[in-house]
Length: 264
Image 1: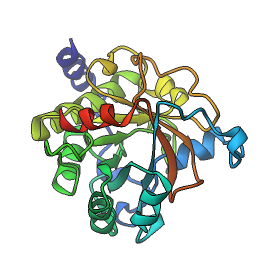
Image 2: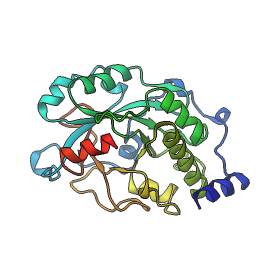
Image 3: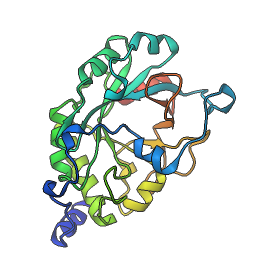
C-alpha cells in the first residue's frame, strides 16, 4: 500500500520542486528543531517549576544545534539530562559545524544521543536527503547509546507552509526518507513534528506510527492530541528553552526503556 502511494505520487507529478527553485542557499541555513513551530504556534512562559509538566516516570533530555555552540555536556549531565538529539544536517547542503563536539561530547559524558535532520522537502527528494543525512552523522549503531536517527518535519522556513506539496506528495516524501534511512541503518527514523503541521501537510493516509517513533513538539504543560497516524509519543519537546541548553525534552518512560530503544 505504501509503495503504491509513492508510485501514484510520482506518476501524478507530485514530486518536490527541484533544488534550483530554492529561494535561498542551504549552506547558510541552520534551523533548529521547533524553530518554525515556535514561530507559528507560539509558546507559553513555562520557566517555573509550578508550570512544568509532570516528570515522574520520565527522563529529561535536550536537543541542540550549532546555535548552542560548544555545549558544556558535563554541566547538563550533572543537572539531570540523560539524552540528547543533535542536529546533523538540513536539506542536502548544510552540515552542523558543531556536530562532532555536540554528538561526541554528549556520548562522552554518558548520555544516550541521536542525530536529527531538518527536512526541506521542496529542495530534494526524501531518499536524497536521507542519504545526505546518513552520510553526515545520521547513522546508528547497536551500542545501546545511540537513539534512532530523527526526521524533523515542520513549517517551511522559506515560504508556503507545506512546501507547495499536497498530502499525497508529502506522505510519499516522508515514506521515501524513512525507507532509505531504514535501508542504510536498520532503524526507522523517529519523526519530529507538531500535530497542527502534520495533520495539515501530511495527514493520516499512512500510519507512520507503526514503524516510526514520535517526537512531538508542543510548548505547554500537556502533550495534547497526537498527529494522525500515531497512537503513542516517545519524546515530547515541551519547551523551546529552559534548564538545559537548547530545547527541553521528556522521554515518555523510564531510563531502562530509553536504553532499550537505543539498543534495538
